[in-house]
Image (tube, rainbow, N blue to C red):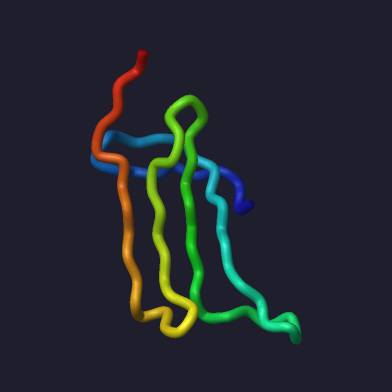
Length: 70
């Protein structure tokens, strides 16, 4: 976990926890691919960025566009 930060998506600006995910080689070094998932309390996942293990240049993003409070 990388702590909290302000994250802006189409649904607004939120204080979010950044959960960074990556894979390691047996020797302890990191593979090039990485994912970051941003979560806000009471809202859930706001954003996800990812790159593939085989190439960090191949990447994508998902964003929260809208939500409803019940």
